[in-house]
Length: 474
Ligand SMILES: Nc1ncnc2c1ncn2[C@@H]1O[C@H](COP(=O)(O)OP(=O)(O)O)[C@@H](O)[C@H]1O
Ligand SMILES: [Mg+2]
Image: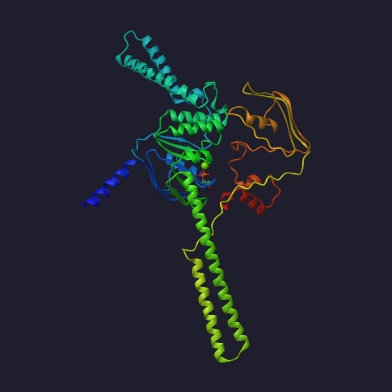
């Protein structure tokens, strides 16, 4: 082996050693919708990869494939070594809603199971005059395990819950009764308690309040493993990722950028500028060529109209032929692979919040409102008024009752005391945190049809404003 080849081979070995996750030629479609096309990238030890892309680009699909809960149509995903512990937080994570907080924390659940097992063994021991050694062995090893589980609880779980602002949570409460943010915090606490080597987090910040996001950022800063993170939180994006994988809105296109988010944004902005300039040059050139063609044709027909002289008619025919040649050249240009695409200005969500006309000045008044949820006092003696044109932000930590207050205002939640009054001709609309009120079996058009007096075309254009494309509403 030549020295160069040897050093190449060493380089390859070193390369093969440092990646913890390798994705090779992964394809995924749903029906005729291509979501991921020939996707290849690696994540190295300690790397923090952010997945970017608009809604529906395939971020969750990719994370599910990385977590192994969904199979790609082609290609493969490999962890190195394969025994790595992978922790996965799905999007819209509702921790096992059937469990209590206590049961949801695996180490606590383990402890409870061990205690039950020991009680059962102790029962058996009590019934045997001379217990067989298998029974005493089992009892002894259960004692050992419980001692270790106890350590895990004392050393790990309570401080962990506290770190996530869940220290005061009643451990007997059902997970389903926790707020979205509390559920996410519990999910993250659970996940990190297992000390994973690779963390896959799909939009963990969606339900978190500001403190929760800061806590998440601090935890991620202290996390030494590899991370794949989907988030739209700009502060988190600016500080956490070391590399970016961007999925395009359609057709499975993607791009992998080795560098942090601010550098990625700069590169994109520079490329967009360059593309705009090149596209402008191309437009000007094409306009000149079209003008040439028009002039040549005009000239040829002018000569034809003005003369019957054979010599000049032949010249007119040559000019007309030349116009054809230039026309074909233009067609080839237009069809060329090297043609610069029109720069896509990023589509933005442009909600048009139209309303049914002006209401009175008094829009909403809340007086002495109290709310109880699950026998617990959530809000006490809340009073405020909202006047026409006002916009109010509801702030408060997870679990403080923001969603419940909104539900009470629209009449979905009974009041324990006080009253809520909407002004004359005021219609209230509530967009829920998790869109719980959408029927998952309907497509976008079917969802809107009964609500809006619009024809199909208008509905489609309306949905387009909200970044849906044709394939989504079929
Ligand atoms: N189980 C499924 N069946 C059919 N289509 C799906 C399924 N899961 C996702 N899709 C579609 O695949 C595309 C990508 O979805 P998703 O991965 O959830 O995007 P993102 O997480 O980037 O918003 C979307 O058009 C979505 O509607
Ligand atoms: Mg998603």
